[in-house]
Length: 130
Figure (tube, rainbow, N blue to C red):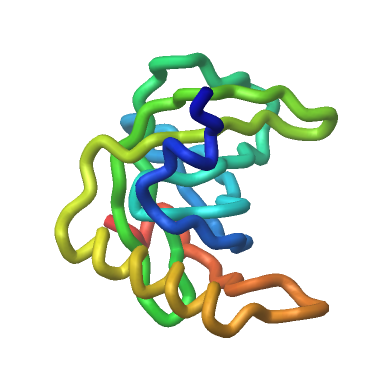
């Protein structure tokens, strides 16, 4: 039988980067715990659950590579004690965003940071992002 690791097409890297979900006028803050060109593992900083099949548009702040926009779908939710989390598969990702994520992952896997958070930058306030 095929394991989850066998099914992965893209290299994944650990990270701790800010993610802002954009749902119309509503902004939901979160954090990516790992990322690849195929998707990410998202922790929401609120208590609203994530449902399988839910579509999410996200701004992802990649240190040294800028903010990329991606649309994804929740494929595997997991409620944690202090936050909601889920695996999200990207559905829409521009070629430039894909390239930035690929380079970010390569950089993190080549030069892991020990003893401190990996690649943390903040997104601009919602009003300034438009």
